[in-house]
Image (cartoon, rainbow, N blue to C red; front, side):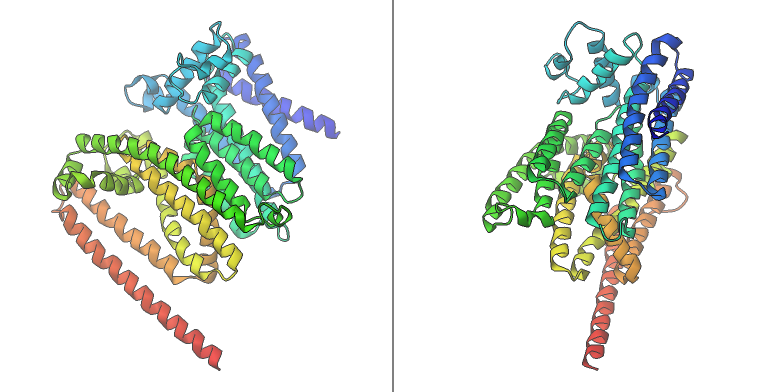
Length: 514
């Protein structure tokens, strides 16, 4: 009975999904259905096997199921409707959410129908994927399963399944970390962020590399937190997934891998390994971190200078700001601007097609809900009493904030680059947000409330600024007048918070004396 369930259910699910894909396609049944049925059934077989081995809870079953439906549903709907919902540009008219996905996927099809081997994806002949990994995988999928049809929805299914499988591995890693209680409330928050953060859903609904990066990152998270595993098996698994990660994105992959290697030093099993438990390890770790930061920062800084220039050229508002602060601060302003991308007030007010307005508003809302908790993370660090846990959190928080700031430098090209790089580090960001938010919520920390109020004030000020800009309903403050007023309000919030903190500490000291 178990065998029938284990094999029969994936076949049924594969048949249903393949039939839905076929109905929405323009191809004949024999061109796409049977190959897609085999492809989807194999992935469902893997997913169900992992679910059964993981002994998942009802909570996780619902999360995985809804995550899968959201991603595949959005991918299918946009593929079929972007010709009407999108702009009059070739990628949208061809059913692609991103220009990168359009270019890479079409070149993957060209490789699939050619006489060249799959590894030609890593040569200079195929330039749309600078690393070649996703291009090679896409081409292999086309060549094996739908050689007679450029059935692009299969690539969306592939990246979606990698992302969803990653949710399972993240959950397994979190369960290992909290063995006594299973899924703690903070663990559930982390899983929900990783599964339903709007950009994570959006990029998984297209032929992009980010969902693969997220899926592999989740596997690495499980590997470093898995306790009962031989050290050589751990490093073998870690190396295998790391190679896969580097083939998908070398530059981002290096930073992710080294971040996990440092995180590994905080795990209990490090005491069993003399090298990791020695103080001598500090020096090579510092060297590794510096090298990783150097290569990552050099790449983004160089691109950021050009993007900042593009930002100024394409925006009269930015030209006005740069003319006041000077061109030497152009990159700094672009970085701050990128930190708030997608800009929530702009997404709500700027004229746009309904689909993009809703999409960008949800993306912005998701990010703006996380920003205050990221800021609160440093408060949580001082609140945490357990020394080891405290410094583990500080490491993850510091690396996450560094990556976010580094990513924000890429604001000038368009509103997609910076959130893309930020998304690649989502597993770390989700972790620090889940831990900090649960602590702040549980203790009713006044700083968490104050930081959210500060952001609300910021959003409302710029919302009225955008409304005035596009409607002219009322006279607006200048940009720097708004900055001045906001600075005063933020100062009041900060000072009253400090006074509240002093009062709390006085009360605690009085209780201790009694």
